[in-house]
Amino acid sequence: MNPHHPATGLDERLRAALAARADLVRPEDLAPLAPVVPLRPRWRTPLLLLAAAAAVLLVLGLVLDGLGRDPRSDDVAPSPDDRVELELPADVGRDWEADEYSTPARLDLDGDGTDEKVVFLGEPSPQLDGRVRMQTTLSGSGEEAWGVTDIETTIVNALDPVDADGDGDQELVLYYDDFANGGFPLVFDLREGLLVQAVVDAPELLVRGQVPAPGGGEYYDMVRVHDYWVEDGTLWSSRSVNAYAAGTRTMTLIKPLVTVHDAWTWRLTEDGLLEPVDQGCIRHDIARDSRTPCEADSADDLPAVTEVAAESIGIGESAPVEGGFPFTVRLRAAADPRLVVEVGQGRAFELGLDVVDPRVLTTQPVSVFSDGPSVVLTSASDPGYVRVVHSDGERLRELEPTGEVALTGDASQRTWLTADGTLVTAVAGEGDTWRLWFWQWVGREEMAALPGTTVCFDDPADPATLRHC
Image 1 (tube, rainbow, N blue to C red):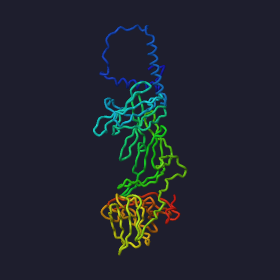
Image 2 (cartoon, one colour):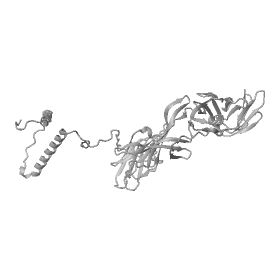
Image 3 (cartoon, rainbow, N blue to C red):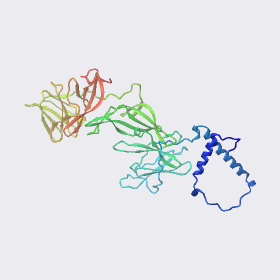
Image 4 (cartoon, helix red, strand yellow):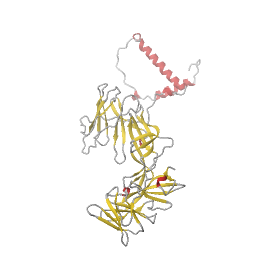
């Protein structure tokens, strides 16, 4: 140590670091002696001297700078998004062929203003469920671009393209069609000549179909309705705000035609992550296939149950029954009244009735319909009497109500048949609220009610006064 320059803390740290580094060197790490080669005189290579000196100063400066202060954010290059692990496709399928029912996609992959034609070559498989090679020639460079995916079918028809990253080119959108669960879209971005599938953040928001929600019963599950679509080059998705009853014995979903949904658009990041961007609330009109922004007080539409089927027949009368299976019904006077249902080719079925003043509605309850005549019986003298009679092709029988709701009418329950054949029971709840239940055929001799929305009435005895609470 030089007595005129006492050691500082920095000196000690440098010595310790160099000594530790020297201790790591082992004999096997040392390279063998190089052969003797003529050396250039030092005066012939002044640039090497300058470069070496500059390198030493640079390293020393970096060491001193790193030891003398805390690291700054710009000392380290930005790290990639740890949520993204892109899977690069294998170069397979050049000899596969496109299925005759596949349609090439046309979109501007490289952003030069000219559409590329992407063909879909299918991996040979007996069930047409092999992998698919996506292949094109870029119009800007003339180079080949390709990718490989597995959507469980080699018959491919792309969705409209999107520009999810806003850079002026377009991304290819295919879809995975899951019959049971609805499916989801796949977005492919052109990266270094490869069509690479984007990684989806929050994939549960980018699906189509009925997704299970809390609740349910013996004959129904509660679900939320999800959807996705492409609009004006943007990928959208939505999820219903409310959950609805989906029948487990039938393909029935109890929901109105106009429903309120949360909505998102989807943005592609530089790292290849497809992430949702909240777009607030939309109203979806399934009949008009339209989606519009919500108003401040937007809610699901009320169900169309206010128009009551009022036409009926009594003892000694007959009438054709409208809707569903065509037939004629009559009430024959006897010691006990008898219900007679006449179908084509002179066939008739009879059922004795144990009720005073029977009435038969001439609108068929199509919600409780199953390949045969069905009628709703009431009583002119007993407002609480409601029955559904069904023919299984051999005889008439009453369907047995089962499940959570009784088929009746009293002060706490109101049951009626709508003009379009929907059998509804409103059950009184807290305050002036009523829960609507919709009757469905659930078995050979059974019917059950599935829950709908909660409503209010100005007059509970009059379905026409139904309103939001």
